[in-house]
Image (cartoon, rainbow, N blue to C red; front, side, top):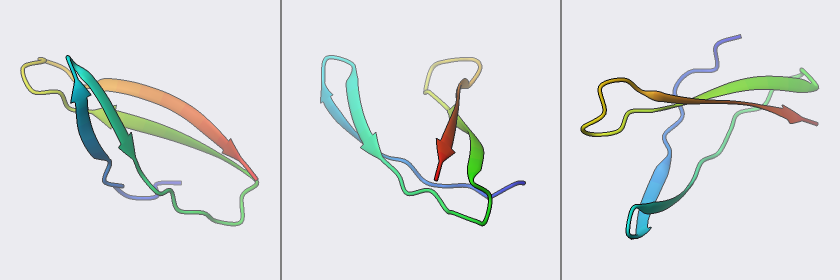
Length: 55
């Protein structure tokens, strides 16, 4: 199920290290599969991170 776009708020900590947070939506599914897509300036293709949440 597509849950839409979720903004990720990032903060540059130092020397290329970043920290961020985001809030995910929830529904009646006990396990949700997610994909984080990062568009990084200067990088030709986005980076992806797949993960699951379990309630």
